[in-house]
Length: 120
Image (tube, rainbow, N blue to C red; front, side, top):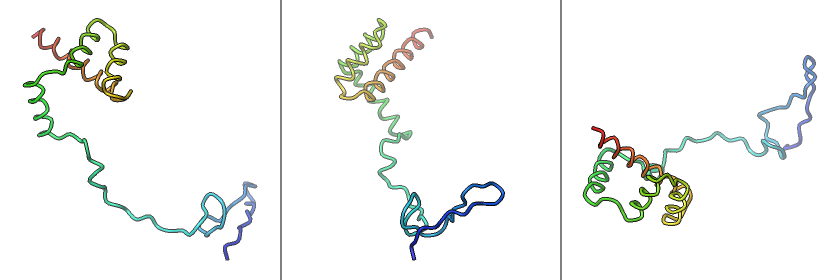
């Protein structure tokens, strides 16, 4: 018996009052009512999340190896105030707008850290 439920007017507010928990054949809340099961988070959801050990290793590698040529050029563009040109450049090298923005921010923070280090 999955027939449509007619709205009944509520006497005080004059608004239609719909039955909520009935199984309906059509509409926004159609179908068999079920309870949602709580699923455990997949391990793939934490991919890329940084921890202390990984951060330490990446910092150590950066210290030993230094910057790639395109990163040096990006920093040079940022130093002379060409932020937009730096974004276009790293976008082309990395293949995406969001990746380019992230890299530009990283290079700006590196430059700021270098300036801070020079002052002290």
